[in-house]
Length: 486
Image (tube, rainbow, N blue to C red):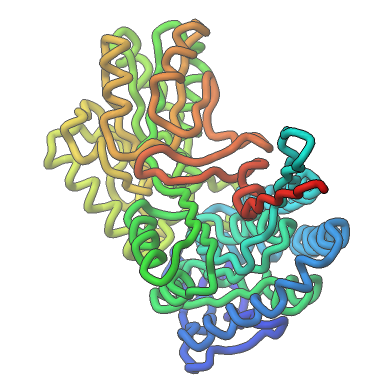
């Protein structure tokens, strides 16, 4: 076991307010992506476990919805305080389990707590409307909860997404069943303990496991609202499976192959830094919003690339708990092999590998899922390297000349999550923002999520929006009420 690793973590699931093992007795083992040693295990939830969780959530929902909004908010704020008090424990566990460095994982916990408070602040804004009419009628609408909401969490931000997505579901009167990723499941048990201590039994249920666990949740006829963050392929599979048992409201925040476009008049110092930070090398590129296509005007291309290389050479790869490390290992063996296959593919397609592309050198990297920061130049839109999400630390650089051509290049894929535009010309920037097919666009910025600004994708990058009032409203149905006056 790594010198950094604590004793093996043995987690449990949260069902109906109790921390329990699986009905089937099976265990899911989680290994360190840094050295492949065993970190811990959680139960493999069965269909029976998931059904029990949904039933518990359904029983708890009427009483939860009947609570005054202020009391729901009080429960959630107590949960937020409890999560923040355990920040370091969450951060270390997440860093070991995901491979992400510990500093960003501390910020993940803080961001999750902030988002809980943000949702609590909006809770009293979940309102219906009165609709103008003649004197004989009064029309109004009510916003009512769906009931039981299923949330499926990805491997890259386990506590960040699980904790923050609880709040919009609960403040609107729903209860929830959460299915964490099987690739980084350990923090889910700690979150379950805190939910059991601060929320009524059945309000939040957390069932760990693999494919069967997730499919049971998606297909359950009593789960009418589902939220998922992950890959486009899995999102489409969830849509299909959900529709086989009932008509459901499904929102999906999916992958991206996001462009960062730089004009010659941009602030090049800031644009160079943004090209590296936007690639999310600090998360090993494992972030849906990573700007993994760097599109440079030909007049600045060569000098810009050299400056990007200077920044990338300063990235320090190492164990995610070590001080000063800015990039850890890939999350899992399967993802590691996928990233390496795309690096080989890029070379076969004729792209020019100008940095990285292999395992770092040294004894510390003999085991684990390590890939250097990797950069390809001379990438063309005809290459898969430019069209498919890798979800790894691989940056593709493309050259352009004409403003219409670069917008066409940016849009010429099935994905459209984010985009970043760099120019001092506001008119040009706004024209680009109007034409780019992406759900979240930064102008002279990258990567930052601003509270209240809806986040989500176009095309195969998803449907629905999160992180703002739109997210809270999406957990309610609209009921129209007509009153005929005597």
